[in-house]
Length: 70
Image 1 (cartoon, rainbow, N blue to C red):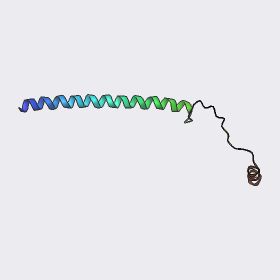
Image 2: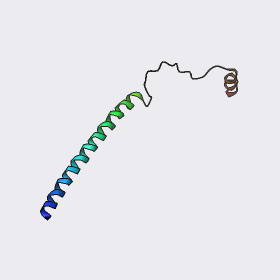
Image 3: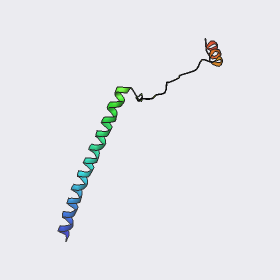
Image 4: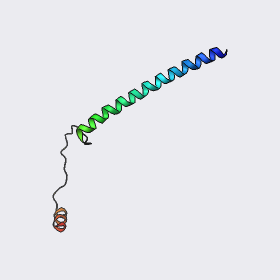
């Protein structure tokens, strides 16, 4: 009886270690893939958008702000 239990524990420990190694490898692979894309884009999200980016609209309030700043 104790021999069966010992064999089962060895088998379970081996399967657990193999599963953990597979999980860590997959996680490291995913982290490496996302790290590559971030280094090429300098943290800027790159996408395709039909919208034009508008940083500011020239208004009377902006003119007053810029004139008062210098």
